[in-house]
Image 1 (cartoon, rainbow, N blue to C red):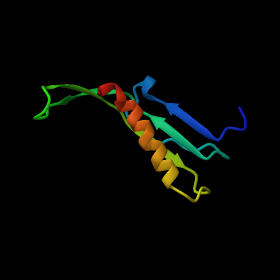
Image 2 (cartoon, rainbow, N blue to C red):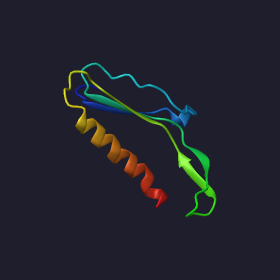
Image 3 (cartoon, rainbow, N blue to C red):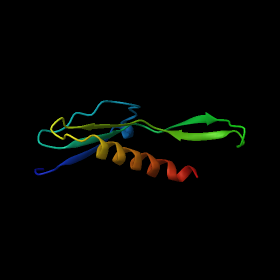
Image 4 (cartoon, one colour):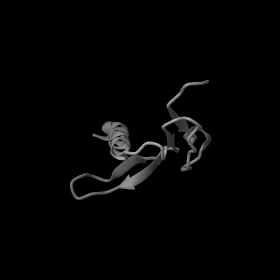
Length: 86
């Protein structure tokens, strides 16, 4: 493949919990996602239960000067992952 600007990689399907993705040459960023696991939750407002938990790692190229759009993108991704918990 050629001409890409962004990559999403998921090693969670291989049982990898967390990893550091490496940006492909010429691309702007890469998002790595680890395996999901169930973790106990217990809060005063909610009854005990389980939450899905996973690691996400966004790496951006140093050639891009503004980190704010990358942070906003990662925040949106996290909100999408957490949407099912509401």
